[in-house]
Amino acid sequence: MRIAILGSGAVGGYFGAKLARAGHDVTFIARRAHLDAIRARGLSVRSPHGEFLVRAPAEDDPRKVGVVDLVLFAVKTYDDDTALPLLRPLTGAQTTVLPLQNGVEAAEHVAAIVGAERTLGATTYIGTALEAPGVIVQTGLYHRIVMGEWFGTGDRVSARVARLGEALAGADIEVELAADARVPVWEKFIYLAPMGGLAAAARQPAGVIWNDPALRAQFLAGVQEVEAVARAEGLAVAANMAERVTAYMGGVAPEMRPSMLLDLTAGKPLELEALQGAVVRRGAARGVPTPVMATLYAVLKPYAAGRSGQADA
Image 1 (cartoon, rainbow, N blue to C red):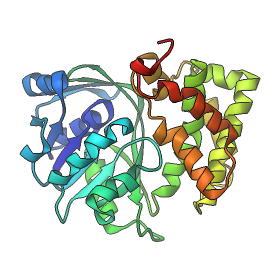
Image 2 (cartoon, helix red, strand yellow):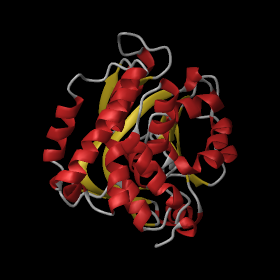
Image 3 (cartoon, rainbow, N blue to C red):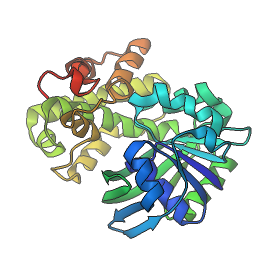
């Protein structure tokens, strides 16, 4: 399979390296020092599952790559304005684009560029970091992609999702296939949007949020708000989402710092519009009150552009 990784950082680079190691024709699209490192030394992955190095083509211009069978779209959502148009030279009639981004709007944004018929939906469960240009470190054991159709969903996994799932599994990637990708994506979002926002607003890791009664109460109230928006949009998310989130938090390492907190403390832009902003906008459109999420959105708004917009960074 001919594959392009658009967004070859910690997440896209990791999955792209797995696919390249399995023998697929993978091209990494990267920039600056990371691009130079991949070209000069290859892409190195350090993981609890083992270490490996792959040597594969790397480009900064998708027009030099051309049409591929699969695009993994793994840029940060705050780069969408410049990254989404880069999909066009990579996509043909038979191309599939798999967005690996936070939030619940990625497939909609991708489809606006390449068409709904070329777009799947997905979410990932993985902890990775770009330790240095050309070096990705996996910080946990999970390396799972949950994916399925986003548009025109049915009651069973589609044939193209099954074929893609087989290819990913053959590259030693944990894969879960869904008939309707919107459900698992929203189920992750119900946890992620309030936890990321509250951790960033409080400048505290997950353990502090969960073990402080006041912070825990606000987190769970945020979970309920996002769940209410999902149900208002007609998504059949699990009936016991609060219990699921509670059970999940019981197993989270206390020192776990959501990506939004990491980005904030590093002075980077925030995925605010894709997470808290999406809850507020979609809740307003459906008449669902979201006071906790709206407060988190307002508190973090001055930091959305990164260090240049921060008052105390």
